[in-house]
Image (tube, rainbow, N blue to C red; front, top):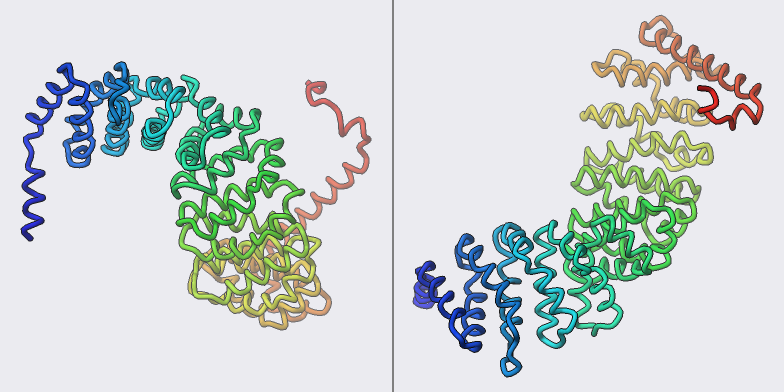
Length: 469
């Protein structure tokens, strides 16, 4: 307790008086005193009031620009940069914005061109904090040639400084013009490395930038060749929730190209996306759903995915079961997966889930069952699992989507010669009759469209729409 009391007493500072003393110290003609006072200010910065720190920023920037003394270690530039680095962390980004507005960044970059040793390290840390805590500072760095400096240093610097450079790059890469330069200057490997090394916040930024860069088709091959899959999959394993979501989305963007579907699955993506679907983040579930639908265009991937979905359907998470059923709804319509869902054992589970307490689960499951009902073998499996009486009951459900799904499935059952007699009791149901009429109209429209396309020649199909105006 006594030690705690002494510590509290030390921090009982008259900050205005302390600020005046600091101004007096840097105003005198004594470089050693400048360094000592600035070093002490850096130590106290985490306790000092934000408004006082804001007033020190112009002073510190002016110290950055003073002619260094070769006799001092650290130099006044190193002490000022270190203090600015500490100040940038305070104020939830507000002080970092002031540092950018003060003109500090051009001075930091100018010093960085010729610095080495401990001064270079401190300058990099100061730049890193400046661009981490204030997005606008990233534009200032780029405008003053900072991206080229960072990329050049990445090619030449020692490994102990590389982390700071990569963390700066990950922040800058959130700017479109920076990503364009990274792509054209063969700097993609550095961005991928930034997703592998550094703080998790920085790695998450790099993953986000990779996802944005992956939207450019010509960048995907370079990203894949630079080891993007292994890096992002690692983040899917070890990252916090937000990082996993960002990494999963970036992988999804890249995997949307047919050439990378198999490599991503072979790298172990499917179990990790299944884990994401079972997580708590709603966006993570949506991303997992989308990526599963992409990966499943390859049959062997579809088999593995359905196995995971069945396991999730057997679980306790309501949200995860709804997400899994939603994916099965889509996969049931894939022509190259005619028996995968049926052979997985999913159908009895889906039928049971028609009576789940959660409306979202029931709606998604009813949609999957409706899609399955278009296949003859799946219809038989559904009937044998007791789907028909449950679907009949659903015609009275409060949810319009549930009623529509049930009616659509029952129409398909009614058209099956081997099963039609099982639903004779609902043939006069308004919901059933309305759906039957709608499906008849849709099928007639589809048939007319198909016939029209058969009569169109190649010239008509490739005609410039502008020629019709």
